[in-house]
Image 1 (cartoon, rainbow, N blue to C red):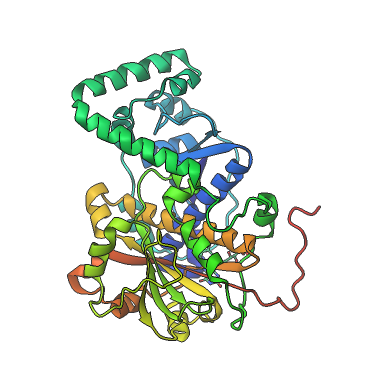
Image 2 (cartoon, rainbow, N blue to C red; image 1 turned 45 degrees about the vertical axis):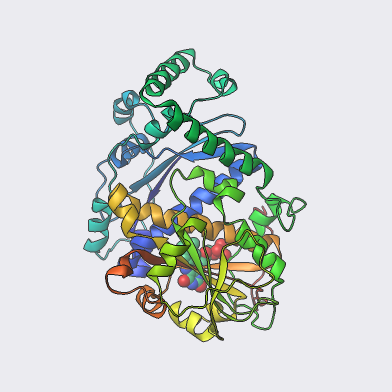
Length: 428
Ligand SMILES: Cc1cc2nc3c(=O)[nH]c(=O)nc-3n(C[C@H](O)[C@H](O)[C@H](O)COP(=O)(O)O)c2cc1C
């Protein structure tokens, strides 16, 4: 399945910022597809070694022109959960055949007139991805269990795969391989045992219902308090090792959560941080203000890297940072997604820039569904001011690029929407 963006469908409203909104939307879409696939017993993987050009060829959108051109984003493999996706791209041999197809259908045009946003085109062109072999390299170094190889339907590709991994195996020292295998096996076993089960069990909540009733909160009830156990359960499920939703991503996590906690029982109102990569505590601590408290709340589960940075009622400030949107203040909590920035850009190049927003979009979609499952409601907040947040936490000057605020998300209890009737989804 391929995803693309038409920037004009966002920029008519948001101007230059549309580039980031479109990438958030891609992240939400990847997560929505992954949840839907999981409901059918399938899994998804991003084919992240594909070039943007090849994705465009496969989707029949090469050579389109502004203002309403479709910009290729990603290709996603969808396959039965018991199988393993051994490829990270579609074989280059088939791409020319797609170029020669006669494509049918034209997307509706949004408007007869357009406003040109040159900055968006520049960003999109800088973020074009070339073909890579990141995942080939990684996969070849993992000796595949025999059962997985049996599952390969095509005998020829099975042989190729074996040959390739044998070659690779020869190049690696035994010690290196043992270490890699050990860590892969640990990651796999932690997925089996935890997934969606820890802390508060959501097994009895029907996925179909949660997906169909998901909406964005318009207004939130600022006198309703969230149980701390639910809050912690939600944080726990944003950890990649606890949640298969993140398996579709090949790299990461890059994103930590800075949380404005407004109304959570047994938690002091204030600014908190939740580290989704515990080993980054020292680095993160060094990057932000030295006078933060770094106190773990006493009721916090021991395996969560969750710390109080500042005790203060900060709801108005949270709203101010989110373009003065009241819901960020009235929410039980508002999460600001702080992503590693400079290092991944240096390591992977400019194409990773959109990908960082995709991870945030996936987190946003997860929080939407988590909120619904617990009887709360969420809202993506793509309108926010990043620089004042960076200033407030001391991410300034050269250090400022180490982490960047890429998305906000509010979770709380919705107020009834006066004058709005919600019919069941897909009602005929
Ligand atoms: C990436 C993203 C950013 C959003 N930003 C805002 C925002 O800043 N303020 C807001 O009120 N709603 C925001 N929303 C919510 C959208 O307005 C909402 O998803 C859309 O109107 C569709 O409604 P629904 O979510 O109820 O289906 C955002 C949603 C997404 C996915």
